[in-house]
Length: 126
Image (cartoon, rainbow, N blue to C red; front, side):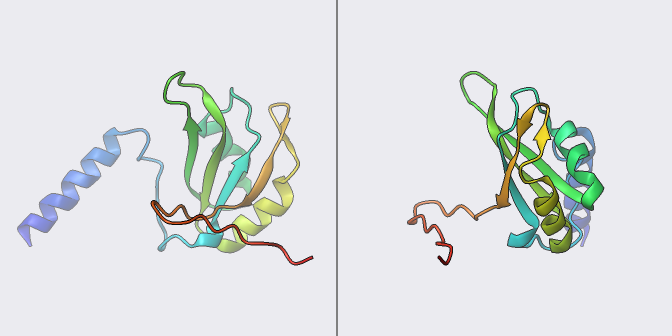
């Protein structure tokens, strides 16, 4: 019991002092339909501005922008996690094709990445 309390206290302390993890809140286990892929991001978009753009649709639990390892610049895409699937659906419907900082966004539900396995891309019915 004492070890588990120390572990929780350590995790809370780390989260409070780390700006990247302090904005991550989970209301329930994340659902595949509550995570959006956001493409077409301007290089000047940061996590805060992306969260602000999507927070009007519901509680955003995590925002992650992918950066190039060598240059440190944004790779032009990221992910937005919502607490509820309905919020993610309404954000996708409302923001797909809309401009953010002068560039149109491409939004879809994120596919879970499986390391080492084959990539299966679902086909839409014709």
